[in-house]
Image (cartoon, rainbow, N blue to C red):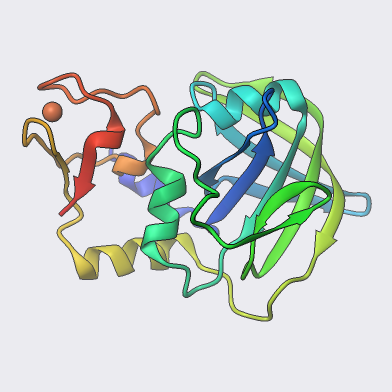
Length: 198
Ligand code: FE
């Protein structure tokens, strides 16, 4: 099965924000967001069961969502997409504002605070059906489209991820970003966070 065909169903690129049990700001980069209905406003998002943000939102039932603009930097996306908030403060070097006490990216096209209405699990993800608590229209920039982001990346590099510990090169059909957070280097057993893109 060619999983890359699944990623032809494209959408935007988003940053989630939340607070964990110690009131630390956490978050992740996702592309799985769907507007279910506008009145009352409800959106569905999914977060990996193993991801720190996913585990946290399952308990706190609240998160923010920032829609990234077309010119969002790769560095920002990688900061939120390839590390875990359990050990890294991703918001520290990210310009943000607080929206109803949750962090949102400063130049976001739009941002929302979401309250989980109910959730269910799939094999690997928590799926959250959320009520929209607040909306901020943000900048008038165009949103980043996930497929354009992938194109932009492949123009710039080979798209290959390399383990900085053992040199293993990840080059599979499934985009590296879609590997679960607990995926380990098949050669040396180190986590995703030690990989860099070449
Ligand atoms: Fe390795």
